[in-house]
Image (cartoon, rainbow, N blue to C red; front, side, top):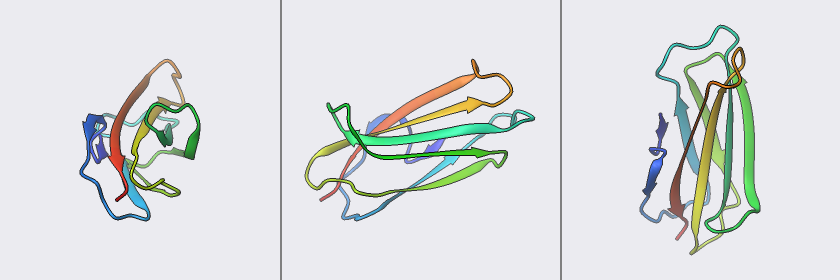
Length: 99
């Protein structure tokens, strides 16, 4: 899970300038941990303005999304991949905007 939820929902516009994201692994953690990839881009674009990747065995990974353009809808995509079984992968997204 992630806060905000990564189920495709639209978050209310916020002031920013930075947007915190906590990714929480609620299933059993694989023995070698997971890779958490977060990217953000203007919705409809293929160019990311933010990307970060963390490898962890912790249940929670914190990110701080920066460089969000104002007054446009942005899409955050989160992908969690097992280090011990790379085919075990989950991906979700949500939409947000900076006032």
